[in-house]
Structures are given as structure tokens and as C-alpha cells.
Length: 229
Image (cartoon, rainbow, N blue to C red; front, side):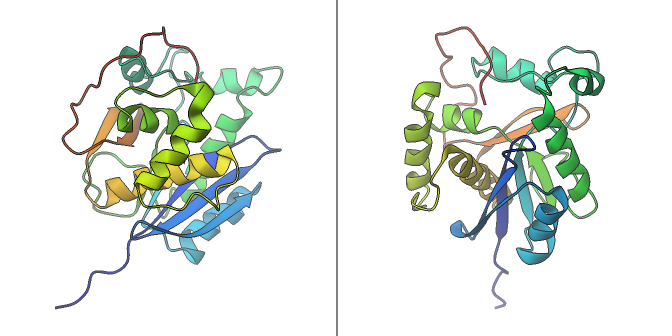
């Protein structure tokens, strides 16, 4: 019997021009490498040619709002009590006087650089190389049954990495932790594990891993939704 080829996935935390991108690669669920770069093309090359990733999960909006209102995926997240940024239109992002949405524009550039080799995921299950939008706060919220506290995100998210069998030592700051959580989402989706989706392919699909057997809608947070990252 022929052995299945190894499954390599990557998770990426997206920052602005100064902070750049942080990426973590897993192979068959185990940590193998990481990369920090401010250069979109260098990161895309690393994903495609160096690591030969099958699935890439990115913490940035994959679509812009069409009308300045929250995208369907964002409305669904907020209805569950999962706090999130809401995406502006592309024109609003470009026009912002302080480049507040610069990290979203960087995310757009990354999705575009990967489009030829890893097109946006349209639906689960995953059958071909692809990339998708994910969200560390939503990952934490679902895997912790609705208990995701922004003030404790460093500790809570590190604990989740340990639960998935990852040694958190290489992940020395929250950017690396979030990239590793995105990689966990990529691995779970690529390997057919339990996942939850928000939104749709046309307006932006968000994918997060879920605990096996967990209800589709865990208990809601008690506080009103505000921005999280």
C-alpha cells in the first residue's frame, strides 16, 4: 500500500508594513518551520516553493465590504458574540488618513500573490491546494466553548497550541502564537477535522476549527461585541 504524502500547511498572521507577516508551517500536525517577512512575494514563494504547502490559513479579510457594512461572515461572528473587526470597502481603507487599514491591504496583497497556486477556498471539504481566511479570536472562542478573553489571549492561545501537541517555545510573541493557531486551523480543515464556517465564498468565507462533537453554536459571550484581533 502506498503511504499518503505528508500534509504541509501554513498559518499566517498579517501585520502592517512595519510589523510584517509571521508564518508557521506544520507537517502532519507537527511544527517544522517559521518565517517573518515584510515582503509579500518572499512569503508567497516560501509557502509555495520552499514549504510546498497544501493549505494556507490567513488572519486577514479575504474580501472587502461591498457597501461599508459588515460582511456576512462578520455579522455571523458578531451574532454568536465573537468580537471582530468589520471590513471597510477598499476605497475606505485606502482613503483612511492614518493607514488604519493598512494591514488589511497587506492581507489583500498576500491573497493575490497566492491566488495562482492557492485559490480562495469556496467550501469544505478541501480537495485541492487552497487558502482561506481564519481568525485566532474565533478559533480560541470555539475551542474554549465561548471562553475567549482578550486580556488573557497570550496564555489562552498558548494553552490551545499545547492541546494540539505543539511545543509553544518557538512562538515567543503573540504574532507567532496567532500564526501557529492559524496553522492549526489549516491542518484541521485540510485533514477533514471538525470545522465551522462563517459567510460564503462570494463575500468571504471564514473557517475555524471546532472541538469534535461540540455544538455548532457555543454559549454566547456576555459582553456586547467590539473589535478584536
